[in-house]
Image (cartoon, rainbow, N blue to C red; front, side, top):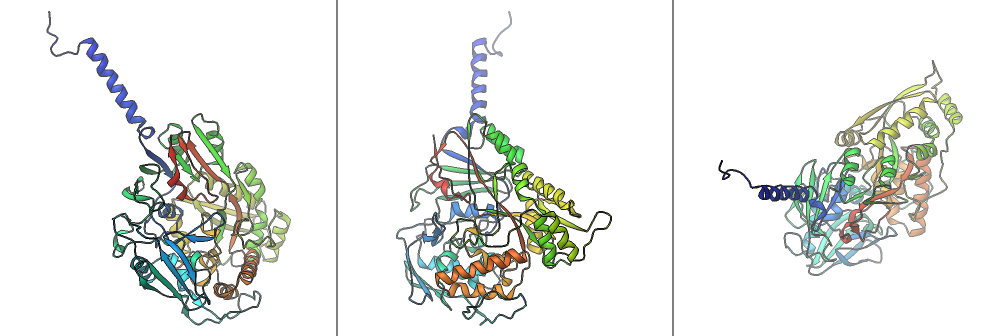
Length: 536
């Protein structure tokens, strides 16, 4: 009889195999246990530095890791955040911010006024590249009361930047001094996260903030891992760890949710058909509300063809937004005619709108000398991302423009390359969705001011209207009624000149597993709400 010393007895073999199976099960479902929340991003994170970030992925990280002196409330108004309070001077030429006591950065350093000064001094320093500088460095101009004038009018300017400097009064008091009245300052500083003194060099890759989550690790193009900040002044997050997976592919994002390896997706650029499918999934809940982000076509105004306003208007009339929303977006959007969302206080409804009108479009092209020859009037190129819904939208626009004799070539690019081309002005048309920033009237200077051409802002279209510049310079000096009038005039001008062709406001869509609770959805898909999420 052979010895069994080198073999498992039957009962031991059974238990061994059982343990292996259980270990595999635990490994495959590790995100279902413990107190770790797994989310997803549909594109790469390029920087964590809150003085630089402007892309939506970067800004979502800012919302988790950092705080500004102020934040937006549900009405999009600025309210205290790291500041306990703020008070303007009688002439609005200065704002005094009182900081919260005992707030600590993730490196255990106490927040002080010196950190606030350091943050803004380094951001505004010569040679520091940041699109967020534009609101503070644009010139102060004398107040005017005239309406918008033709684009070739001359605008006077003192050549003096709006922000004169940041002054430390005591460890918890800081004063922002302006060269002219700046009533909008609390709103302008919302997207600037405060960093600890002396940490400039590490913020891009190893950020340190005061936010509800602190940085743990970053694997480029794969994932960001954050840990709960137990000392967070607003209360520690309900989850202990947050893992953010970077998943550009729509099918992979869907699969990760269905198999349970991702718990939560907020505005993850799902194909609308995918959203409809996920609504039927057993362990998932899909919530949809009206959104405030805006999808638009950016237009290169230096292009020999597109510099003609009649051609831009013809393109806008030729796009059947309602049909695309119904058939491509599956009714998960609403048409837009302004950069501002309808719920924003300065929204102007009385702008030029572009309901689908192919005949009017053809007439405008005729007037622009673009008569039809062999079924074609002109050729254009549209750049967009590789995201599934972006490609489908571009193809729908391509088919509609073909009806008026415009041949549209579509170039799909990885997000990093698309963003670079948009920034460099290397495009005729681009398709993009602006996230969050359009909730504030600051978007006008940031996106349409002539001094906001990248890297000093996001005027990627190279729009240059001196009358609009004059109004933008006046706005910080004006009272509330005049500011509303200014922004109304700007919106009317933009709707005629079309540096961008507004398309629609995509719905805000959240997909979550049933174990995720206590999630209050914000119209722009803001990630600050993640702090309160609980896992059942």
